[in-house]
Length: 155
Image 1 (cartoon, rainbow, N blue to C red):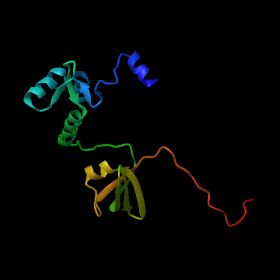
Image 2: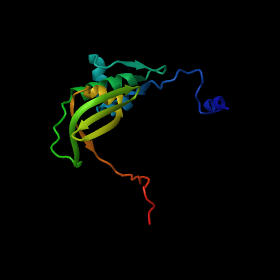
Image 3: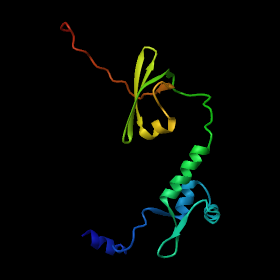
């Protein structure tokens, strides 16, 4: 049934998929530049473009990701001058566990032990390791309450 729909939509199941690449306009939009700039970058060798079977220029998603990553890493972070979060806990990293895409970071902040679940990518980008000084910022939209088992029956 799926092949009938593909044929109905004018797509052949034998055509190579273009999912790993973008049209030039899409790539330019993702990069926040004009199509002309993207073509100039291709000429300069800053980005590599290919062509579809129909001769249209295509840009690999990996190329767009590479350029976005380069831009993000080369742009200096602006210092934070104000922040809405009031719950800030300076502390020291006491545990870092990275597993796949997730990571657990434990921080000892005064008498408080804070545990943060973050992405593994964040841990690598921040270069977090045991003993690092960090500031935990707690911004919560909900607080849950538990009622412990009472020693005496409530009246």
